[in-house]
Amino acid sequence: MTRPMPTKERIIDIAGDIFGREGFKAATIRRIAEASGANIAAVNYHFRDKEGLYRAVLEDIFSKVFLKYPAVPLPGNDATPDERLYIFIHAMFLRFLGKEGWGGFSGRGKLIAREFLDPTPAFEDIVETYIRPQKNILAKILSDLSREKISPEKTFSCAVSIMGQCIYYAFAGPIVRRLSENFIPGEENIDYLSDHVFRFSLGGIQRIINDPGNNLSHEEKHL
Image (cartoon, rainbow, N blue to C red; front, side, top):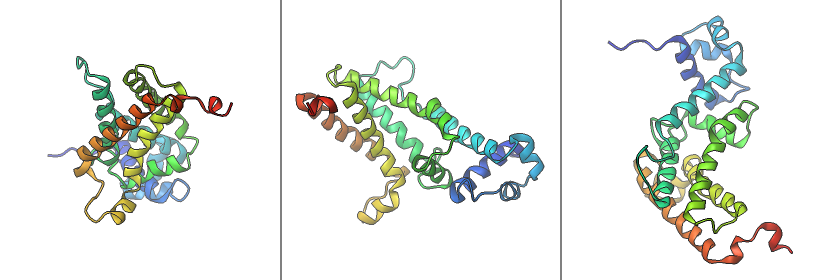
């Protein structure tokens, strides 16, 4: 017999979908309470107010997915920089497109998309706790991959480009579907997407390494 989900967890689960589909301003505590089978008093007891609930939802969304899909090799795996880059990219796609992740453009996926486009104050903690460390992991991979032949400025640009490819496939899925008759960016294509972004990114990184002009900083190019 399946045990019922505790009230607090049930509220967070339902709120994530409602916040994603309706937005923070439009979603109401009453609507969330009714959908989760709880009362308003229970929501206020666990989270104090709507902002407290929203922060709890964001933390829940990110903590569970980052724990399930780490961007680094398992302990004891002496992976090469190339392998670490693939692991990082694959983990991003699992988080964004996997059914046990954010599920593409599901309710929670829409919530992440909303925050990426128009961050709320609550997202600041998420950036510092989860997103900035991911950027640092990727920057270290790229530094090792290039044997430190790429400037920090260019390394940052490469990191953003790699993450941007993954994010685009996740949130622009409806557009990609219309542009391609045979390709749908979803969970069933995660391995293909990971391999494509990995190989495409490796080619770009190698080009930057081999072209000294591409490694100049923005200021140096305009001297």
